Amino acid sequence: MNTAPATAPATNDDRNRKRDRVVLGAATAVIAAALVAGAGYWWQGRNELSQASAADCELARRIVTEAERISTASASEARKWWEETGDERRARMEDGYLGATISTYEGYALETARNPAAAPSAEELKVLQEKARGHCADAGITLSMPRLGS
Image (tube, rainbow, N blue to C red; front, side, top):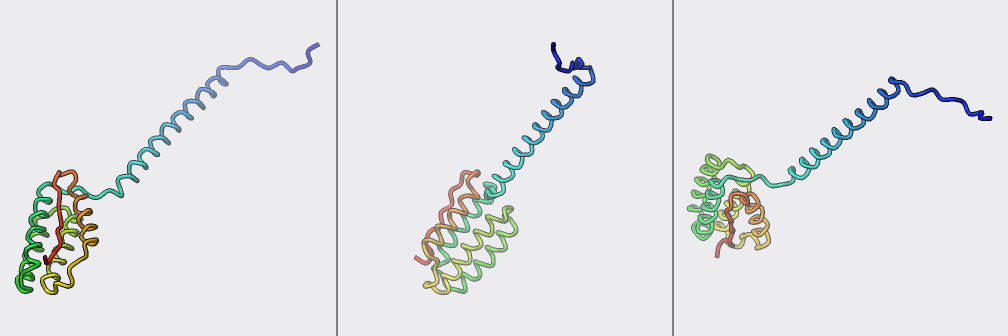
């Protein structure tokens, strides 16, 4: 004799509840996956350098070329160039991060003109150059920051 209790057959309500749980679980999984993907995209993008326009990178290239020349000029000529170039860069360059990098190189040129012994090291210039190149990567313009005062 079978003493196991008889189970009632599944009703429509039981089937609907199970289906609702599966649908809700799947929807939750899709939403969680979308959130994880969005967070990953944000995390990766937040550490990348801003990308400057080709016009900004061409302006930066011109300033760097002038800075190399002005670093061997008189201190008064270098000071005048530094002021005029800074005004132009702030007025025309849209990418402020590239502008800050170029501004540092401008300052190095001015200080080198004032005191050639204060020229930045090759390592300092290399770091600055790589940062500037990163900003101009998408524009396809390669910036080179040569030694100053030579």
